[in-house]
Length: 223
Image (cartoon, rainbow, N blue to C red; front, side, top):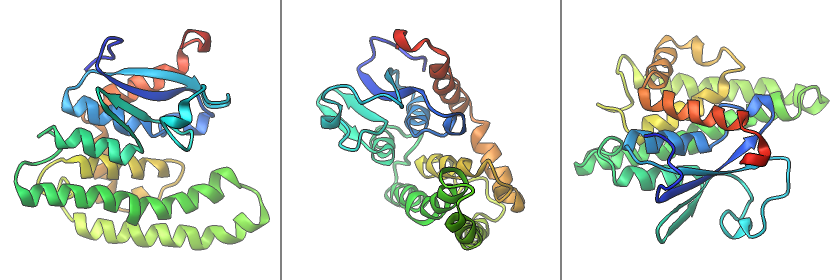
């Protein structure tokens, strides 16, 4: 669905971030979920370098993006928002009880079992690159990411998706794996490399990524 300034759903996002963050800010997860669900939305943008707009901490207590609003529903945290969207969309959440349970399980696993290890590596590679403690920490951080990816690869096997179809669990897992684009760690597992490419080839992801990236091309004063 295209961005619609009159849409009932609003998300917040940035119109400026450092180059390394473009394509990986977490509003992308929510944009992707909305595209898969076929829901129009509007985006309220602001500069990541600037002080947050007055009152924003009442929407997002930590000053991050995205925040989400639809009618009386106001949320923050990209995973919670993606799950909320999925609950109303069969494209993201199966209707049978087992399918729903497994989709939710993989959504949480993406964050708790995989992203937490990846974030430790991102911390030393991006935010503290060159610092002595980061150089010492990196081998252990990379080893842990490799361990998690090996386990994930073993589960995936030759399947197209984590379960028997694409769900919000795949959306979030692919979003997490994309954070390793500065490494070859995903590519070390042919099935994970193909899995990520398969998820990124979805038309809904292409539309979400295009709108996410287009926000950085807008004049900031027009946002």
